[in-house]
Length: 526
Image 1: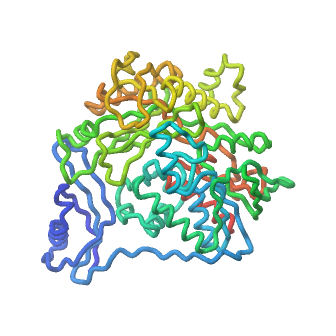
Image 2: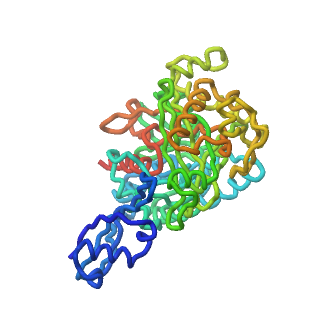
């Protein structure tokens, strides 16, 4: 007999197979010797009670019959080396790679064009950025094989269940080397140290089946005839042609947005969010969330998710990284952007999270009202992108250059007081004590200050000067949307051009971007 069983266990019980077997036997009213094994189908932590943390498990148990491992799907890829139909995929992030995988399944040849380097080669550029402040504008935390998520944590949680098949995306990650835990954890996470190996495996398989990759080729032009796209040209002089072009360049490809605008291809300004990254000692977050002074050995480093309305403006946490590190994520010189990531074990001593404020067009028009150098009409599609750039440049200046980041202790920030000293922080380039309300527009700093105090009421101990506020978290999503037809998914004015993923405004994270890539590929395949 096989049976799905729901269990509510103590952390130490959930981590012991014999104990789980005993609870399965009790639930089924059989001897423990009748339980031949189980695998987990769902796992979550319930820390709502101040007295006890629980682990909720759903297991697939085998009673009085041999145990069989979890059945994973088989994926059937085709040799596309001589395929009649080909598609250029601009960008090798999750949207582009999963679009390519789906194309190969459908017998269509993907030609992947990536401005950055292969995933392992990116590490050297990240090291130079962290240690010496040397930025490669085409190879960094945002650009390169695997996209922004590869060296920015590998979190796989998404609420976008209506956008596609989440389980299929997770199963594909497992197929290429991810731990099966991601199939059942409530907030699955691969880790920056493991994701590059998976991305490499995806590329190698695609090449084996006939796909082509062109790294270190930044797209600089589109070939368009009679409102139909025929191919692309890169900065190296490479010209490629295909039946369609998938544009999956990510949220930071400003040059692509400018190119589209220059060629009078319709794009739209899209509200996004901007703010700071906040770092606490992980022990503080653990004590708050688990209601105990020391986290138990069977519990993972804890996370949090916070949201509040402040004066009609949304303030919320974003990309929370337990046991994580703050990293420099700029893509251009003289701009300061920070992001966070965690290794698979999440074993660093700090917890960091973006804390951001919703940015609407009306507020940005007010911000640029006295800035004649920036076209500030509300119908300017690049308006929010220019706003994003302006804040990042102000933060770079405030940090003192070389990608040092302006920062304050949390309570000091809320009281508009420059910190006399700053706590230890995981941000490798270093911090510079600065009044962040002089970097951030008033509507953002004011909302953050009020929001942080309210979050302190929700999480006792969160509002503390042991936490450091670091500017600026500005790449939460794209400030541009590239419109597409709801049925064909093509650009409404350019036949064969398929805007895709986060950069086009249709996704928000690894899994949702991957699902969008598959959706586009299926549309092309018909």
